[in-house]
Each structure stands twice: as structure tokens, then as C-alpha cells.
Length: 469
Image 1 (tube, rainbow, N blue to C red):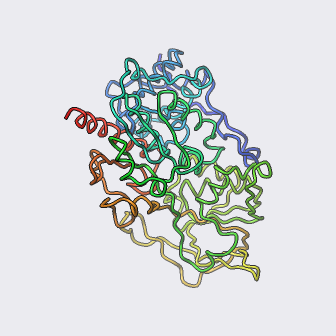
Image 2: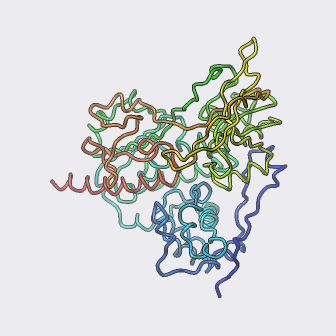
Image 3: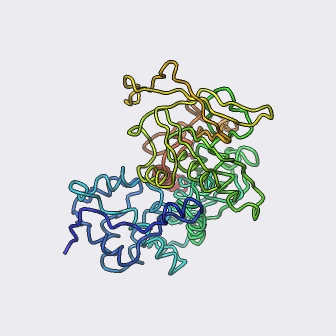
């Protein structure tokens, strides 16, 4: 009989006052018993609305049914047919605005915990086997052609995995010394353990994906040079160039972009200093400018590095915060201070050139702007200062222009993103495709994965035609 509980079964978590001083994973995952109980809440709807909300088209009722039956390994295999990074997705996907938003159980009560169950199945698989769970590799022997993937982030890895499962010779070229893209340098250990990312990539390597690191495409090799030795190319280099507010004081010592701050912590292991030679000095008071997931990650990381007072400064109100509700909730639990309807106007420094304070102005919400949200309007004469040691700017990213500047005739948008056909992810250069943040601007991991999957299907069609001529 289906469990008719209106609420999800709570996932075990570290205590907030303990976890805000360590980088261990916050959510501890379902036990087998909890996973079966949560899976039993699924109604197994025939029209499967949840699948329509999944950018990579996971057979959600199918894998949940296997968990109900206690066949956890088969649950993983069902997911892996269409998703190359299930352990990642189960942790960082915004399921509440995708598959879970369309769950019938959400009409009265909470949706089925689809993300939590996906994580459970993937973690179970990793704990019990090191084989990739997709049946689509069976019978694949001859290599059909060669594909190059530029960027080992979620879009690139998804594209690589799908093409490898179709029988192509796939090489991923990654600029950093470690693959994973934003999964490795951007998302903190306490949300996404790097060992999980490494295991997911290892599973892709086992099905034939070759990953080459320290390969800066645009410098070591150009897209034109890659085309000489590959049948098709996918560009998934993300949006890693930080934006700043262009206010006085942003050049002071102690001002970081969120990209640099999180890269130092996650990729360069600053949280393990002095074991790793990457110190990050943050002081007592830290301000994070912005209200998205990256801002929450930066603020929660600063707290874990020892800051006493960490402020999220955001120019709009609570309802307009773009971060996931779960991340906002966790940040509040961990003692992050939210200063909403405030906007920085300058950063003050001392005689040594270090940050000493941040000056803000209070805001109120006016008429809606082009995004449909009410426009924040400064309140004249409401300026105030807060003593500050460190300021982290987390207001968004744009694509690095290196590939755009070194690829002849590549069509791009005015803001720097690559122009593609939205149906096929094809650029204006024959055989070259692109997807993820390099096309859309900074978005979510799962949307980047969806773009990589769509591009892989188009590249398959293109290479089939190319080799049939």
C-alpha cells in the first residue's frame, strides 16, 4: 500500500552548530529503511509528470519503484541510462523547481523526495561496485568517430558520457589540473564532496572517456586545430569570469570575487591549510554581496573558516532571494546574518590598503522591472557603515572570452556567450556545438547537463551523416 504521508521523510543532517565549523557534508543521506519509506510515497503515476520536469529525462517512477522493491542497484541502473552524474544531481539539483514541482503528491503536501532518492541509489552503487550502471554500453565494440569535449564541467561530462555510451572515441580537454568544472572549484565540500565528483568521473573513464587536464583550449590548442583531428566538438567551458559592482574600494586587500574565494577553498583546499599551502585570511567580519546559491556557498564557507559575523547583503527582499530555499534555510541555521533590502555603495580601507568597513544604503521595492521583479530603489539619506575585514562579491559570472577571441568566425552574443541553435546546440561552425553556462550565462548544474545531453544527440546525428558520405 502506498504511504500517504503528506511530508517527506526527513533526511539526517549534521547539527547546525557543529557543521558550521567543519567542511563535512551537511546532509547525511537516507538509510535503506528511510529510502524505502520515501519511495513508497510515490504514486507511480501513469502520465509521469515528474519526468517532464527533468532536463535529462530520468525515468523517475522506474527507479523509485526499484527502491520500493529493495533492488537498489537496479534503481541506479535505471537512472544511469540517461544521467551520467546521478550522485551529483541528487545533491545539487534544484528538484523543487523541476521534477518535484510537477509531482502529484505536491498538490496536497510535499512532493516525493526525488533528489534524495537519486542520491541514495547513486551512493549505494558507489559503495557496492565500481562499474557504470548503463545497459546502453552492451554490444558496443567499434568506435564510430572522434569527439572533442572542451571543458570537464557538468555540460561537458554529460556530453562525453552520452557519446561514449554510443560508441564514440571521446576526449575531454580541461583547463584546470582537476576535472569537474564548477562541481570541483565552485560547490563547497559540505554540499558536494569532491570524492563523489572524482568517483563519477572515474565511472565515465571506465566506459572510455579520456580526460586530459591542464589543456587550455585557445592557448595550447585552438578550436580550429581540434577540428583537424576530431569529427565534432562540444564547447562547455562555463561562465567563470566574475562580475564586480564597480563601486569605490573593490581593489582593496580583502576583497574577493566569489569565484576566487571558492576556488581557493574547494580546488586548492584552503580549508585544510596548512596541510595545503593556500591560506585565506578573512578576519572577524565578512560581507558577501549577492543572494544566489554562490553567495550562500561563500558565506557558509567563510563561517567555517572561522569568521564570527558573516553577512549576506542583498538589495532585494526575502521573497526575491534567488538561492534555493534549502540553502537559505541552512545558512540561517548556521548563523549567517541576512541584511536584505540593502545595497553596498563603497568599501572603505585603512592606511595599509586593507578593508575596514562597507558602506551600504537601504532600499525599498518600487515598480516591477523587465524581469518582472519589483525594482529596488535607494532610500535617500539612509547610508550606514558596518566594520568589515573581508568582502566577497557574488553577483554573477560571464564567460571567459578566450575561445571567442581565438576561434575564427564563431558567432557570439553581445554579453560574450556563444550563439547556438536551441534545438540542436549547433554553433555557426560546422561540427561545433556548445552548451551550458557558456551559452546561457550562469545557471544550474542540471540545465547544463541537459544542454550537454541535447548536444550529444545532435553530434551523434552529425557524425553518422559525416561517416555515411
